[in-house]
Image (cartoon, rainbow, N blue to C red):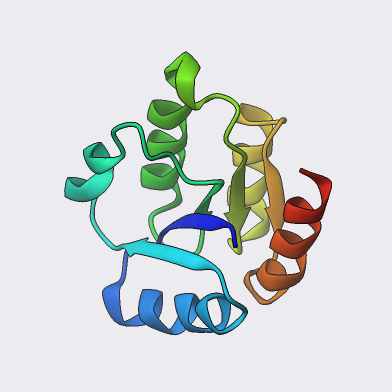
Length: 116
């Protein structure tokens, strides 16, 4: 099953968001802080999920860092949730990313896995 990296800036909320994805069978590493980002090494996830519901500018910074390395540019980034103005700003900066509501994540990831 797909290996996912989910970033959301609130640990308790992150656990709630990761639960349905794990229940669906995905291998999800969830992180609520930036200290764990350098742990990827060669074991890249199949997709990165970045929540725009909290600290969206931090999420955009992480996405920029993630895609700046050529070896990570093939990994899709999914931005989940967020206020309309924050989504618009993020879409302008990352037009190649995937955007969806948080509730739509399991379905969107299933489609992404099927497309690969």
